[in-house]
Image (cartoon, helix red, strand yellow):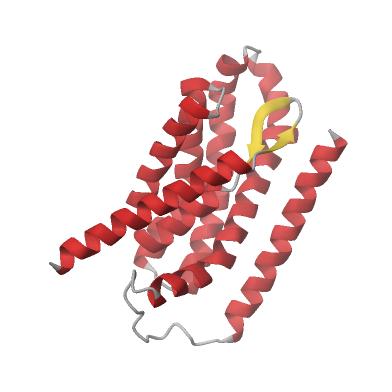
Length: 224
């Protein structure tokens, strides 16, 4: 009975996270590089990363696939290639933090996981855009190569940094609410509170990174 209840709660929460992630795409899509119209910032990866931290990487990956397919047939104009790129981008971000935090459930595991997520998404999408964008955009690979450093690299780095900062800032409040609502078990007191000032310092750093990344996003849009 307890296992059945746990499965039901997981499914309900996964559906909730998927719905929230899709809403962020529907409501907020900010163009980043005017020369490349499909490079738009959206916060869905932050929601999916929260799902990966709370429910595990597998439900988050499944949510990313469902959302990308729904997006493809509703609000997107990039077709199946765009859906595949969205899935790959989201998975490159949510898998590192989800897997690392699964085996290291403390603040250092979350921080290390999010840093790895930023690096992984930036590198993976840089390679993916180099390989696929010439086919999708109908331009030469040389032209795409010229866009990698001024366009694709900063876009994916800034996007991933913003989403990592949002994830870190929102994780504690959200999981606290879910625990108080009885949707998640209470955390057993362990050795996680060794340095009470560390979370405050990390929150300040994430807030500063988030502000800097948003400014870079705005400056890039205005200058374009």
